[in-house]
Length: 374
Image (cartoon, rainbow, N blue to C red; front, side, top):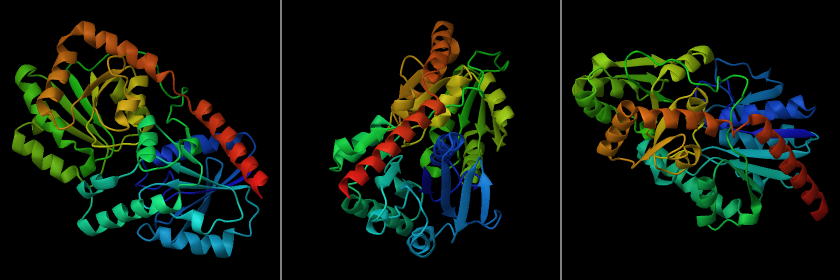
């Protein structure tokens, strides 16, 4: 098959996140099975206009702010004449509205989640309205087309907006089992709580800082690690100073794969405070390192954390609940051991190889259905 994928960013973009990991982990495996994949994404000055990444031909055009306006023009003048068997619209924030101009090819859409009103926690009112209105318009354009989503929560979101269930398949975010230990390893001498992910406002990381201040009152030698980078870091550093916990908070910034696995493996627990996610790959990665996760009980995250097996869910915004759950896993050895073992058991269920094979089956079916309807 010759496949065209459209996504705002590619995996080498500094703003890449879970959506890009999902895309590349799956489609590089599809390439390895003998298929051709081309990715159209936005251009940033640090990266070349074209290159091969993990076997995927990446074409970068336009810029990050207005990439969605470049897509239909580039498709019409450059890509429409190419012999693609299917077009895949990987929707992330602003949709490309491909159903309006992809008419003579089968179309499959991928979505991780709607932002809805949560977008206003991250951007200014004007940018937020742009995303919010685009998602409303999306309901008018995409409802008749087949979709892949990454979790039950995302599926429920679509169904609540009137999309037909028969158009949907779930292809989970997963893990490369060759990269993770899937075993418990020795922990840091000090009780260590870790946040792992992008430092963005909507991730609500300040909840962990407030909870950590309460944890310190009970477990005085506890420390907090923050792994990741983002524009919310200055605010978090300032908050740590204001709360009097800065001496026990370490900002690691970007870490490579080897250091990431070491830090996650040696942490006692990982905490995910985001207000909303499509899934939560970082939760699975932590589990695959033998580390339990305490996560907000919100859409997406409640799918990637098996409450009582791979970790615990807390009520989003309830700082006391979060602090108490952190304290409980740090002082209750039986609970800690049970959840740490369960984390490994849970993570073993998710494999990129399985997800890639399912994606191939869906793509082949969409192509076949399109041919029948012509």
